[in-house]
Structure formats: structure tokens, C-alpha cells
Length: 190
Image (cartoon, rainbow, N blue to C red):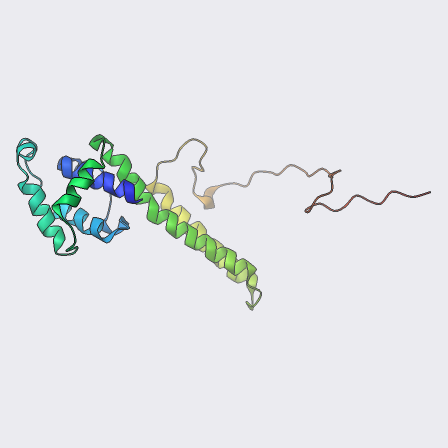
């Protein structure tokens, strides 16, 4: 996500008016502390007039000064690097979407790991209850995420608790032997 963060910040430094187009994005969505501080500064320092911003770097200096309170290592050179890393400022909304999705992915991975650990823990007094509680936590989080992300073709569009289970086709006996199927019956010998 580091590159998406750089591209978004570069886009906002080039064209600060794009801040209104990126949707709901919080500073804590950023994985890099300096990027977090810079995004906070971009949001708090009043946006410049677009015509004046092209000619003058005063707004960039104000943003840098504000961000340095939280991230003293930030330099004007790094702001230039951020601007150079954004090839197309008009894609700021897409960069913001990538940044917004990363914490959701981390939380999903954490909840799934907890579910796996709970499912394999043989020391639990009531493992079924513990596994179901973890599964409910994972399902609840997925339901929270559903309205935040636009579905795409092939994705599950309804929240999990509203989905009807699809009927499963009957399993036909396998003629192959493998790790998951029982071995074929022995053939009689003469």
C-alpha cells in the first residue's frame, strides 16, 4: 500500500481540490506514520486557489510545516518525491479506495486466523461454541464491510445473513482413490 499512499498524497499535493472527491478516508488508514501526518495536514490546511497554487508553493510549505509537528523527518524533497510518484492525479479516488481497503484486508486476515486457530485448538472446553463465536465475528465484520465497498461482477452482493443456501448436488461415488476418498473395495482373488 506504500505506493498507493504515495500516489494519493502526490495527487493531493498537485491538485488539492481532489480531496473532495476521494470519499471517506481517515488518517489512520495510512500504514506509514509520515503519510498519516501529511494527510492530516492536507486536510487541515485550507486549500489554495487552483490558479495561485500552480504559480506558488506557499500552500505546500504550510502543509509541510503542519505535518512536521507529527513527523519531523519530512522534507520538501520528500514532498517532491510524492508528487513525482503520481502519474495521474485524476485517479486519486482509485488510490484512496486501495488505501481504504487495506485495513479491511488486515482485519479480515486477523479474524480468519483467529477462526483457524480456534478450530484447531484441542484444549478448549467447548470447541463448537468457541468456533461458532469466531465465525460469527468474521461474518459480522463482513456484513459491516458490505456497504463500504462497491460490489463487482461475481462478488457476493447480499450480506451473509440474508443469503439462502444453495442446494448441493448429490455426491456420486468416486472410482478413484485419493487422500480424501475411501479406497476402492478389494477385488476377490482366485
